[in-house]
Length: 184
Length: 195
Image (cartoon, rainbow over all chains, first blue to last red; front, side):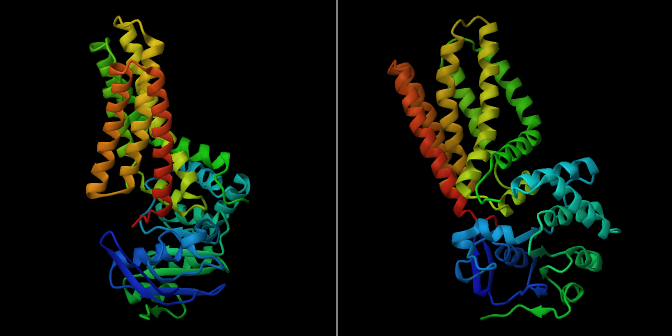
């Protein structure tokens, strides 16, 4: 992101300048939850920056959003509304269809991730496992729970992880070198 | 792996949303059947009541009701225009089922015009439902404007078939209005920031 900012619908974020390289873990701290949420959406290519630029891999979300979303997976702050295993299987199948990936492989991958997330409550483990089922290169976490940091980072494996936080403690749990968000 | 909505993604979106709207389908069909039984004659009932249901069902597709589905769709590698087509099918299916329930109940109550009533009702309900979908990605006056346009589409369809006596004209108007509404919704969804 280069001086990327968003200002609409009463939500404001940025300008944000940061880089997330392959295999890197970057945790950024923001002034409040709404700003952290918008920054995570910008990083995943879901919201488009109104000023400055965002590149996800070689793609610009403003013109190549679909390509960006193949690279980045977004995990929301809010847990899923279900904790039932059969619903999870259906959810993974649904996500596999949206990402157009093999459902059997996606289900197997999601199960493997769930094993690594032992101890994490299902409502938080399921969205992460489902997001990783499409094997993204970048994992974007919107205000993840610091208590689950070791399991989440283990589940993420070698891929790049960008997480947003509203406190330093949370950010430190998710990155070897947590950064303050940088004004351009 | 393409970046277009595959048939699989299309059906996954429709199926997931219809499953979540199960209660809405039941209530809409029940309400339509009751009104159809009470008001079996004339075209005002099926056109206006079923259009109203279609508009209401479209409006409850607004982001936030099924947040995890919204977020999954928005974070998936899909184009807005194609996602719009899949999302638009859901309220249209519910509105169609409600219209069928209305017309069947009206037939049971003594109306003897099932095919024509169904045809002219669909021609009003589908474009007004699709037009109301654009209101779900807007707020404030522009949202109200789209709801008003959706109601206007229904009224225009009624005028064409009842005052104008032209079911063919209504069908033509319906096809044009549906096409424009779906296109508009797709464009709006492509630019939509779910913040």
